[in-house]
Image 1 (spheres, rainbow, N blue to C red):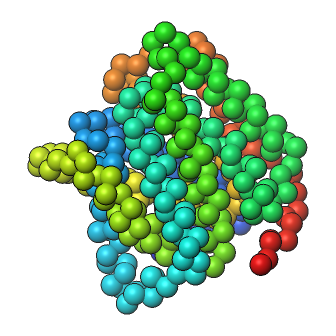
Image 2: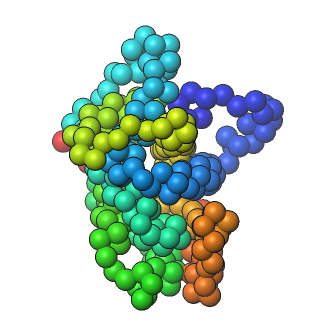
Length: 309
């Protein structure tokens, strides 16, 4: 369970879940993360009057506040970190990636922003092979390629949404977050999910503060509550994502994240009246199919030995 949370389910149910293959358990946690992430994107849209760095800073601050009881309860032991420079690099890429992601979500339809963000999966595969020494099967590469083809069906440029800074920000965010995900896989070899999350919040606040000072504004009472909710959702989606990715193969699980797209389409329609077209529906079908294929595929290549200094 992520960051030490306990479930109220029955022991047989928990035992059954623990008995599932690691990739399957990781995929289920990523689905939970996708649900929370979709709610978070709705908050970002509703709070678009605040610049992206300000939103990201409030989000990180709220997360840090939520972690204070954990820090006190552990008497500071949760702060013991192995791989300081790796955590710093991962936090920097995550902070910049999240800020650019908020910018894209504010300015693009939710379906478009989510679709472009899935290019992250294309970066995770090569990075997993290069850094983590994971052996990536042909079936996994094919699933990622087909899934990205579905993304292109949805995110193709049009007169309504021409290529602009928001699209470039979404692509850059995907690369930076892929870098962050790769760092997660390395850090979880020597650190708990709780330690990674706490330090991510601390470093995130410190790294975002200089950017947030430009365009700073104090929130109203209602906005403060929404920003606090945004921070809570951010912690939830990150914790479940880290936990899911730590359980299985990074390259294979990357495809499962595509389930965010139909969720974004539904929220975009219900909240903002965005009606998906035929190509959006076809692309969603392609993406969901490859996500399921990657999640339940029986083949898993044996991992290579990690690189040692």
